[in-house]
Image (cartoon, rainbow, N blue to C red; front, side):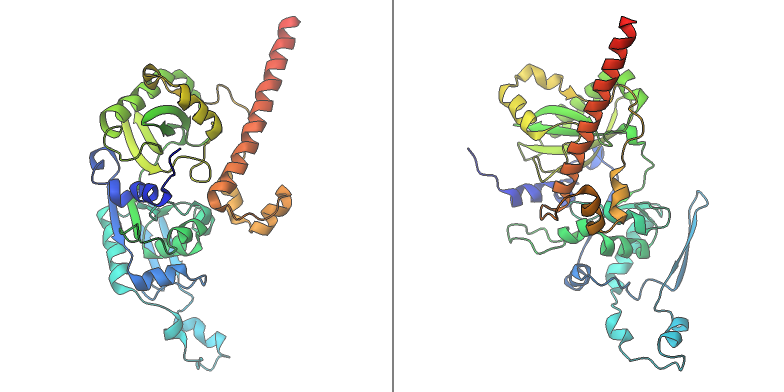
Length: 360
């Protein structure tokens, strides 16, 4: 049995290491290296925005969206904090950092992408901090959006931790050109021993009527992309990749991630079962990977991102679980298993109802 080198696998899945290879098959992206002083700032728990985040910033888009950011370090508020005499403790300049070069690089990147961008670190997007933004979106329009999300996200903070020297690529902030993506058009694909084993809707367990209707086309388009562009180019044997299929014969690579428990959510599948299937898979089966999706509407399903706005203590209390050190991926896996069991019960109940109707 081969021992996995997780750090090398993580390095291969960093967008900075695969973007040029698949640039024609993915979304336009700007990669901004994170300097040492910014890295130290991002690792700190205190949520203080840099000086470059203007006191009042109005952002307008082509869709007519407007937002105003407000900086608590504005002079008009310092008087009230110091008793109204205008004299503070003199430590404001020391407490509030400044990163003019890095902030300017972020601003230029956002502008080059049309003024709206999707934000992530080397491996994760700050979906756990989505609740902190206006409109609860991961679309960033200025550096204030960027700093707020990065500082509030535990996922991104984990990415910015010190890593072994095997990874010499450094740390990065990734900005992708913003696209309004239909949740029913995103899919996660599982590759084992360089064979495409399975496909799951990315937003499992949401129901989308068109998936059943277009099942064959979806599988064929993803298999074609995998065999023509990914299989012989991506360096790993086992991995997971996400795609976006906006139309027939058009599949866009979104991301790559590590295969296995504790690394990537298995969504509609279980990794143990996938491993068993991989051990007996044949070459012919690669053209027809297993595609699981909801064949019918099971009603309102829980939305995982809604729980991120609650403190972990409250989540543990209501889930009747003890705190875990497994990190974000293990938490997602536990939630996913619960959702899958609920869906199985729903499908079983529906089968019983149909059987009873037939007997009548």
